[in-house]
Image (cartoon, rainbow, N blue to C red; front, side):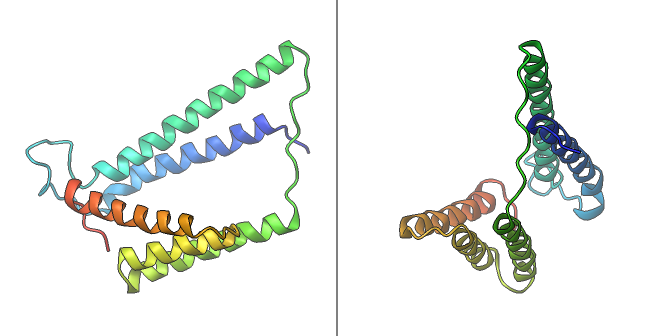
Length: 161
């Protein structure tokens, strides 16, 4: 069965909504409740960041569903065929598998090294998988990891591994 790209977008967005709901539900089971950094605000606790990311994921996936439904409606109204989803080529499938393996190794590295080392290594490996050869991009990735670390540590008061 062939799906057009809007239908594929709807299906993947439904999966992301389900994933966001799972994050919302599982957060209390995985994150220890601590309001040590809440600064007197009840909602700013250890659940805030994971749950805000879950809400952001659900909202953006919902917006994507609405846009895809609107595109389907407009294409039918104008009697234009919606573009068919192209099949992945073999090299693209291997690249996807490479990224899955890369992030599996990244999560394992987090257990044995700190955030900076594993994140810089993962970002460099991602750029290498994308066959990026510009040194500036590698420098930007390293600086971005450092900025994320500093924001989490000194602004959000979140201890990273």
